[in-house]
Amino acid sequence: MKNICLLIILGFFSHGIQAQEMVRDTLTLSEVVPDTQVQGAEVRDTIMNRSSIKPWSLAIPAVLIARGALSIDSRFDHKLQRYVTDNVKGKLRIDDHLQYLPIAGVFLLPNIGIEPAHTLKERVLIGGAAYAMTAVFVNSIKYTVRQLRPDNSAHNSFPSGHTATVFTGVEMLYQEYKHSAPWVGITGYIVATGVGLLRIYNNRHWASDVTAGAGIGILSAKLSYLLFPYTSKLLHRKKERTAGSVSSLGMMAFPTYDATTRGVGMGVVVSF
Image (cartoon, rainbow, N blue to C red):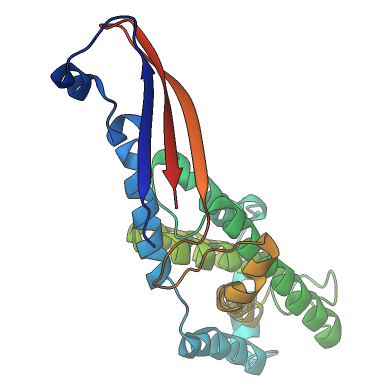
């Protein structure tokens, strides 16, 4: 995407000014549009061109889901949960809150200068689609399989909703910041894994529930990114996101004042 900015300065000065003084007093583009904004737009376009999801990457969450489904009521599930009930005293409810930490990071990290791959509106759209798919997948499977929880509290154990929620957020976190700050995604996956382990620790889920939940979360986020070229039409955007030019036209006008010459004027930035 190429941006061409035209700067027009219309000045009305109280005294005559020589040509060299006018050159010195003319506002430069860097004074009107901060370098950080121009560079930020260029970086975002570059990142977006590299943040596409490869269809073959869907195999990873698919394997996790299949592994979880094939492990329902397995010997490993019961052996692990028996160890938990025999050795763990007390519960840690922090997983109820940690499940939302990655998606919070998706929207808050730009405030500390970390560049995301998509704009705020685009992240909202991608996140909304991802969590909608997560909710449909998780709840439809829960009330179809009706697996009993380890603590015998309900027949909605498989898959783990907490784990699916946190892995949806962490996959978005990874996709948004993998080029500008790779450590963000790595940290997010550590947190997500911790949430899954806490679901087992708290005797709320079997290991198979957690494995499948992680796969569903990752799959939902990846599908949302794959569908983004189509869902983005909801934003009514006209500019193309492939290598090309910007079709939108923007203009900003603002007053200017030069204390040295006591002159006032107007600056206009046209972007097309």
